[in-house]
Length: 214
View 1: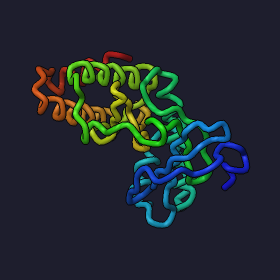
View 2 (view 1 turned 180 degrees about the vertical axis):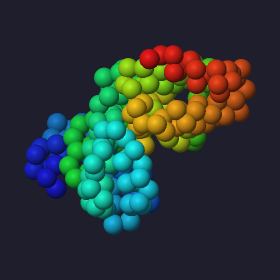
View 3 (view 1 turned 90 degrees about the vertical axis):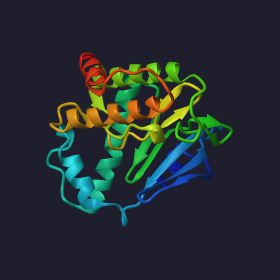
């Protein structure tokens, strides 16, 4: 891998997760720091869906309708999304590097073991975690000018503070579909925390609160 030659990755440490479109590995950098390495499949990825989705993002107008070009653009976009999230102060993995179909980022865990997803381990303090997550949704929208677009208990790690992961679907607020995607994120988050017995705002109230952050 070019990333090994560039000194980004020293050695792979094991598999974190496997998926239909990408696998995530744990690796070490030359200084012994843990990294998460996400490798997208170029052959089995849902090319048509990805092309339609990414071509609606104003940042990627004019993208060639080519399988590899779309996968590489997808990785580039996820890296840039993580950069914007970091700059906005959102709790999210720090992006490290990318090349072709590979994305390297900060590993959220300890000694090669990832922190649990919220779906697997409900928060000990649901109210605090909900408030922190809403604060990050506001930062992402108001400062990062992004909508996560796939936010749910499956894409939040607990450290125990909530950390948003998987920014592959995140889109610029200039995308005409962004408001609908934001409402979907809002509904999923409220649905999860509602099951934990919290007193919550309505989806419309939370949507407007986040939208007002810009």
